[in-house]
Length: 311
Image (cartoon, rainbow, N blue to C red; front, side):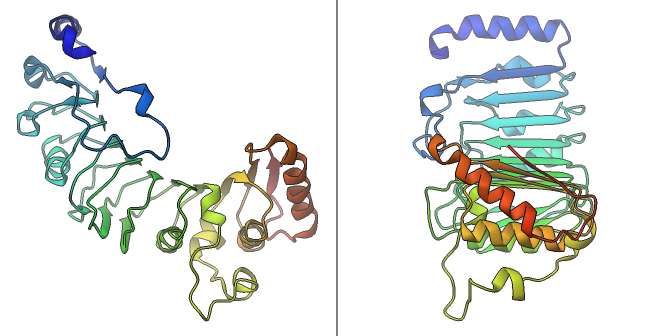
């Protein structure tokens, strides 16, 4: 209940800035609301406000504000800020654009449990951004665009709902790692993942959740029995650059086996594959391991240096 201790918190922040602190984190989120798929944090008013004297402080390299509101127009002195994390508050697209524009040294942007009424359209090129995390955020109910234009982006993490986007465009020339973690409770949205993976090129590490491997709503002429074997394209990133695959929540389903077979038979430079068994039911863990081991023994590997581990 930070509202009852505003004066005390401000004194703490004042003390920290007087000592020349370079990293400042103000976290006032409510832990009881932090379950995976709930959306009851939307329109949840921030519980604290960034003290006004911080806007004049010029030494911050890392700033994390969780359920702590701020005035974007006042963030004009953060010339050395490299990392910014925002959570549990409304963050409009115009605010994000303003932050990327005014914070000249910003390389890492993290949004957790944020929401707005806009499309997530960062189409204007931002050459400084190296890391982008979007963790369980909710965008406009009519939003259809997720666009990021960051040619030097190396790490992209997306977790949560897919917001039913129709256009997904993450533009980067040097992408090294993608992490995609989606709510498995919701059905019918896996097409989003396939669209996103189709645009990935040059990555070295791809981490996906079990939801990625599930069937999605298929077109009438789609043959799931043979797609991953007969019709899946040999994407350049799979054949020439992908070196590590991390699978989470493996249950040994037919479609999971097909997708993993695709990676194993297509990944010519693949070095490491980690199959993390589902922990939902301990009684089935041995079955999940048996299915993974059978896959390892039967599928011919495109890479002679591939090491497959089961966890």
